[in-house]
Amino acid sequence: MSNGNPAERLEDELDRAKARGRWLSDDERAELDREADAVASQLEAKQQRDRKLMILTGVCLLIPPLWPVALGLTLFLLYPDTMARIGLAAAIAFLVGGLLLAGVLGLAMVWLTQLLF
Image (tube, rainbow, N blue to C red; front, top):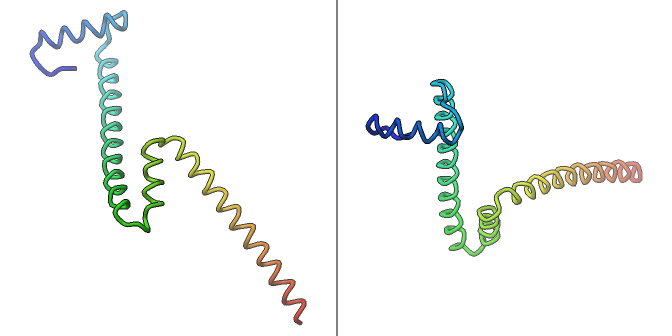
């Protein structure tokens, strides 16, 4: 909503009323304004995070051992939702694999101790 003169504000309210098919109460209008502000702040935070990740990707590209990190960051910047799901699946796989490996190593230690003593 514009904070200009009252005529612009009334015109904005008229456009909103035409779009919704009715006039909004003050509470409804305030709620819509709060939702719009929340969406705008989320969008700004995402853009800021993306800028930081692009800078970090550029730094990683300059250091050859960090090229795999740069690739991961690039994929995350291009496909954030998909990479978040892949990252969650990878984390679960690593946790399960680590637990299985710890169990196998524990059993191997028990078997080895029984074999030696």
